[in-house]
Length: 55
Image (tube, rainbow, N blue to C red; front, side):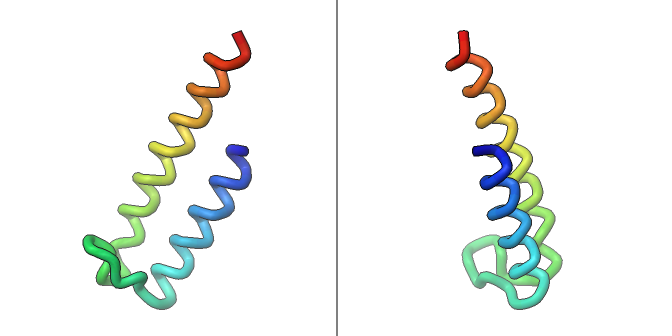
């Protein structure tokens, strides 16, 4: 699950650099770092949820 999330978010960052997504807050190519912050947050939440569901 975390690998698929990572791949999708990396692809979104690449698309943002090539052609901006034109979403609010993602209108310039240099805004790809915001996707990196979201990717880190989503990945962290997925890892934490995996830890609590295996107990």
